[in-house]
Length: 272
Ligand SMILES: Nc1ncnc2c1ncn2[C@@H]1O[C@H](COP(=O)(O)OP(=O)(O)OP(=O)(O)O)[C@@H](O)[C@H]1O
Image (spheres, rainbow, N blue to C red):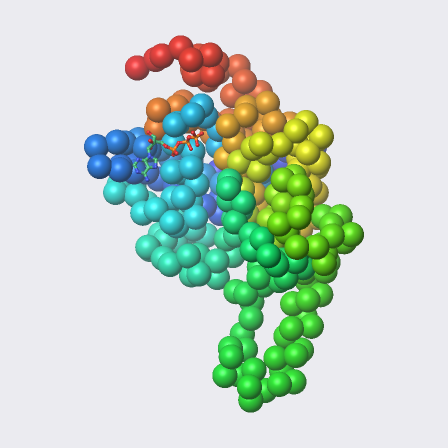
């Protein structure tokens, strides 16, 4: 049972906490196109929250509102209880929000380890000037950052490719490296943009396992968007369903699966 203030216990016994992010009456327009129409939902601490919907439903737009990249024309985003003002991407990152991208955004010529290290940038306090005058401090910081990166590389089982340039990796592994880079920021909220897109069945299973393990091991709150309804059902605690910019369902996977509007949307039945 969902207690608004306190959270809830999942079927597998995990404790879900208070609301971390709240989207309140969000409307987002691109010229005459309403990509998001008056949508409200929340994301709770420790939760795996999915946003699904058919093509063009508005999922990417919603992820970009959550990440602070798009500012909605109407409505308000609340983060940790406070209204979130428009912010630059690095300010969002400093608030503990990290993301992956649908079209992998890694430095292809750099090694896996160096890519993962770029995820530590927001934690680096000693700037270039500081590095010049406080060599010891900069080295200590580098060592600490390196330790976090190596821990995550071990956790995601990519030790064997740590020195391999990303360009040489197959697609599924690139996706895992991108997850590693996002985790290196030690985010409190991790946003995943279609983490299973373009993967074969085995890669999807691996990615599902890693997402569950990240949530379990680090307690990271995870919000993801996904086109494929099947893959998120085993993974998510609660699911928002979008269609033509509207929210047509919100609840546990079972509630959503049995929602007639959701069934119709996925079968392509129009409903106004
Ligand atoms: N930058 C943009 N400029 C104009 N229209 C946009 C822009 N981004 C999205 N749209 C429109 O907003 C609507 C929602 O698009 P969005 O990409 O958010 O959906 P989606 O659910 O992520 O789709 P898909 O599963 O195909 O990626 C679509 O009609 C799309 O054409």
